[in-house]
Image (cartoon, rainbow, N blue to C red; front, side, top):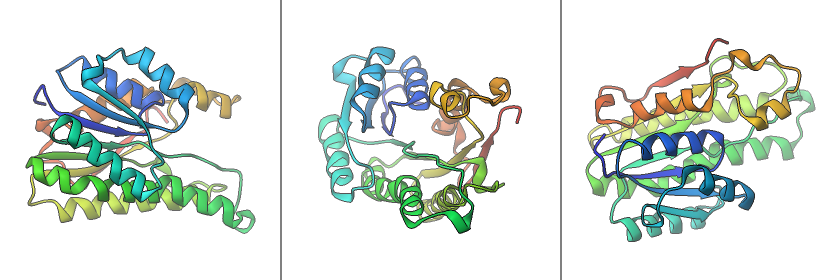
Length: 237
């Protein structure tokens, strides 16, 4: 990838976003715009990546709010002059409910945070990516979208929607020199995941850096032939 791209990472202050930004920052003079919701995560992210202020724009944004996301994208281009890459990492998992036991609140939250956030974010980014004349879009899906387990139907449905969205965007932008793909992790080995699944065997889980390595390739010039793909990143699971 060229050394001076403007890279937007929404929901980028978690374990995966931190790993991705660190990898990309080590391989070029890229500029980054990263969104967060939790201030404690933002503080930890800033300490972990240690990127100069002139190359980093960190903003608190509710990714399900179209007006907030639209304003954020405008500010990114106003500050850096362009936008070339969107990695949409906003998402949340919740399980433990069969369809018959899933209430509207839980279902709506899975749809809002996983699917609506992806739709709102990419819709706001597309005009600026088109202006740049080159772009890469990455969505965060899940293995559950392709191989849905029982007990988490709302999450499964939301992530399946993200896969459909990524493929739809790929078709709509295929003549604009912009690709759109979705990465499908299984369970990512982060402190938060270990806390949520304390009795699981995490030795087979892919690490954030392993997932970030896949994403780094997909947003490079070398990945031009890959468009509309759902990329498994399951580790040894």
